[in-house]
Length: 279
Image 1 (cartoon, rainbow, N blue to C red):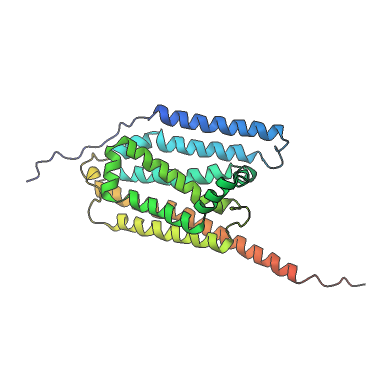
Image 2: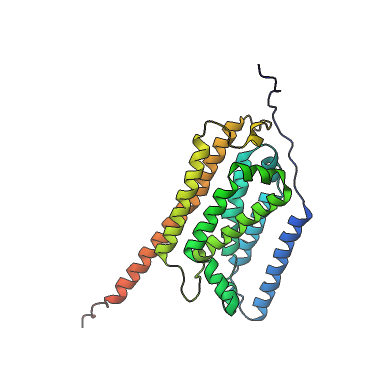
């Protein structure tokens, strides 16, 4: 006989205006605004800094706001693994891409002019380093013991979110910018990093999608949300990681492939000068 009470629907979810998150977002916005001011003073506005840059960066900060402040956070912390997956995709993929699109290339290149910092940065943006750190963080945080521990410990949960965001930035930085400046990641290497990241996340997504039992006991005893059972919710989480998450990697891989083909075509044209004009 089942003595447990039936799972009830959960509908009331709160916004999370934690001071640490708000201060972090405002400080990043203030720093960016200051750097834009310096760029204007140096005559860089309209040359190295385009109008699109602050728009992309603002969207990146807004994405972090949605992930950590909106009811998605409360929903993921209380009842829904699928909501948690949305949160992770926003932090590890969407926000890093938007923030980097909003960062002028010469700002990043400036960091590589400092000898010690240059050495460190060249190591952490190495293709193998970004590949293994990003995917290692993805897999390690989804181990049941560590995942459950992060749900129970707010400080560990903060570390989890920060590692997703930081490793996401490190993965996408050499893909979206010419890094390191003296030897940028080539198109084929970008394709390999993106493709293997897509495969890695797809394998993890498949585990959740096709599992016949709930991976995390915390969600197994949670209230129902949107009429989904805990197993339905887990399978939805896998589908979210697989389709939107994997789709970004697939699109980026195809984009890098197209850029590589275009580059090869230009090199081919340079090797064969145009025929002489008829008299």
